[in-house]
Amino acid sequence: MNYKRIINSIRKNEIDNVYLFYGEETYLIEDVLKRLKAKLINPDFEQFNFISIGDREVSYEKIIDACETLPFMAEKKLIYLNGLDIFKKKPGLSPEEEEQPVEYTAKMPEDEERFVNYIAKIPESTVVVFYGNPSVDGRRKIVKQIKKYGCVAEFTKLSEGEFNKWIKWIFKCSGKSIGAGELVLFKSNLDYLGKRSSQNLLDVENEIKKLVSFMGEETDLKKEHIDRVMGLSFHNDIFNLLDSIEKHNPSESIKRLNYLLDDGEPILRVLAVLGNQTKNILSSKLLIEKGYSNKEIASKLTIHPYVASKCASQSKKFTIERLRELLNLFLDADIKIKSGMMNEKLVMETLVLTMCK
Image (cartoon, rainbow, N blue to C red; front, side, top):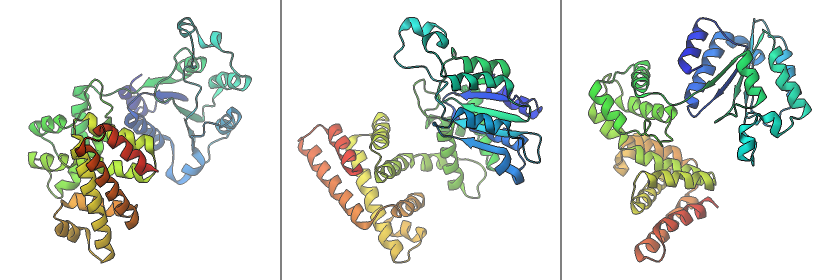
């Protein structure tokens, strides 16, 4: 079953007792979950009738107990399970074992087998949604059980036609409209439809939100809006890199650096903008302490209001001493690159890892 068919079945109140959702398009999975909640759960009793379990270590017994507990003042309760490892392939299997049912390659623990068999006995008063991110092993007995007694659905990227309709719908929900020419221009600034692209609908929705915010009271999206705002996407990526650095997350920081470099951004430009944005964050922090508003900061630093608001937000995450320390590190990296002392990508990776310490 796909996204459209699930949405239609929810509208018709044809709801299964158990679902397994997986795939790269988590935005659609979250949308279906919201629709199920809206259909089944009275907000007044949500704390009793909606249970979200994201603990990998949760016992199967606890899950069964949650399923068996009757809903409070309602016909059904909804249980969302995210993080269980029982849908994944076992590591280290030979090609021959890959072709065999899982039951032949590894015996299930007794509690897991009991849980798998319980899928057939989930009460009518309970709806269970499993999230098997990002893929599942279709040979596993639990996957077969869910398919037999409920619904297994993979959420892949939208086709180009579906993507066009989705973009128009998101703009419409925001009280805006996008014409045919603007739609083409907007998509040209994205990489959603690229075969190897990791961009998803959540990323695209964030771009739309930025455009909607920039448009203000205007209702029709124009080329100038796209040129101005999506030209700021690079700066937004820089802010995200700084954010992951301040969280001392080296793997995320290197990943965000590689996103920038994979997009073809020259290393010296990335370094220069990192330095400039850090200077702007430091200046914003000092001006905020003097009582300046975001609008006044934008005027004082001669930067775009959107960039000014991001700088003001980022300034709360850094101390003045930390920002000055980062500026010194940028200067040192700039000297190393321009003098040819080290490979420029190695300099950037070393810089990012040093800043994460």
